[in-house]
Length: 396
Image (cartoon, rainbow, N blue to C red; front, top):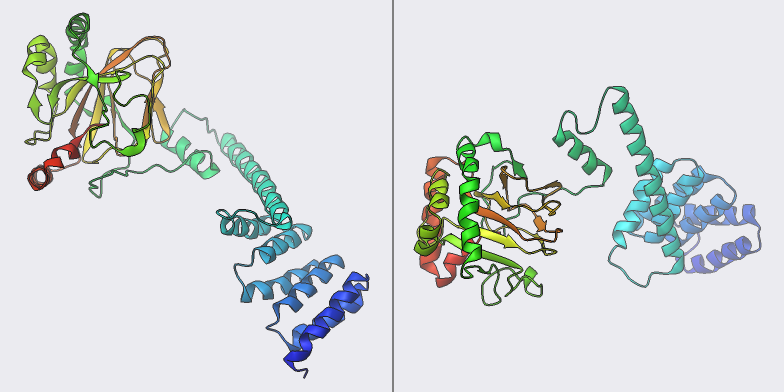
């Protein structure tokens, strides 16, 4: 058996034969080295390369497998094996090795050109496979009678996620997470028996709002730079601005008597909703005004133990929408939107007029009375612990 000190000269001789085009000779030399010194990955890499040149792809794949056994994160070896699998008409298997290389290099810069080209081949193959997969699946489902938008919106979204065209959005409250609650972006109006009476009050609420808008300015910036709002909006044109403004009927659990006097029908309508009453915290109920052309960026609410209701009061045509997770809905006259604001959401007004909704929070209907009591006690304790505690219950 040759001593390890003799490996390097023999490697050079094998590489020299390869460079001279003496493929079979080079293969014999690399095979000898691999048999005698199986831990020398350079020899296995050389054998894999020469076997590939000889179009013995099975042998090439086996040889590069030995490299990966010793160095599973060797990006060059991953790409090489993927390439050989493609040449051997095993594209689906090649994808996992291309994907591994892409994952390992996702945060690396200034990669060698050879690696970059290999990664590009992987991305092209991934796109090709994803397209084939999507087309086949849709074709098979269509033959079984599937029509998008006809039966199950949840199934439609599941397909989108499976195809990689939509993300998975889950509850991610920034302060307090209550486990075991359904992961739903929007709730349907017919799930809340009290809502129909509230919606019937929209004309009266709109009348009171119009009177407010025609009088002295009672709206103030929804976000101000001195508050404890999340940093995601500090640099935007909705901070310290009436681009997104609010007139509060309830603020941190305190009734604004002045606005309540101006809006008795609004106050009476909200009395029918399951508002959470927590000293110094909630209810929170306000007219939320979004000026024309303004967008509220994606963000998460602070708690998942509540739902946010938007009761449309002034809704111009084509005024944009509200996206929660993967689902986007538009405001419609007479129809409330109820959503979980602990899931990523954003809103925008693309019309040329202002949009105003009556925004308020309600308890999650899945919570028991005991759980509501515990959450209430906890939020009050937070408020007692810190002067900043009251900001835990800011709406989104």
